Length: 113
Image (tube, rainbow, N blue to C red; front, top):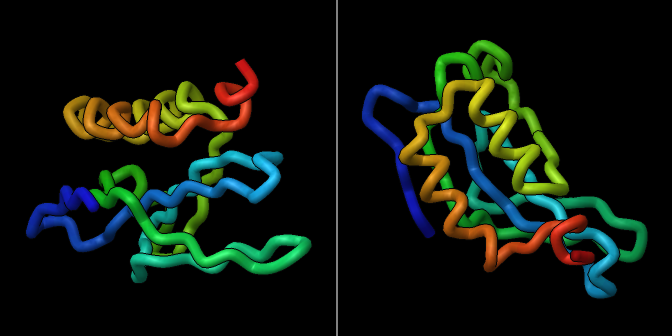
């Protein structure tokens, strides 16, 4: 797992990939103010435990938005994730690192293409 946290930033954003057995759902879950390497995702058939594949320190905008509460952001396209992260002030270098996961974690619309 890749870690990109700085000593000044204690709030952490972690990234999880959700893919159901039938490939009906493929999403990236970004958890702001994350305090665990895993998340439990409730599903109709059975709950899933996901392991984070990437983490980074949160931006000041994200810290202000989350207000010290855990916040889940769910994306079904990489373009939506990138657009959100640019609005929230995520460093371009970190965005470039995340984009390297694009082929490994194809999302819903991209898997259909």
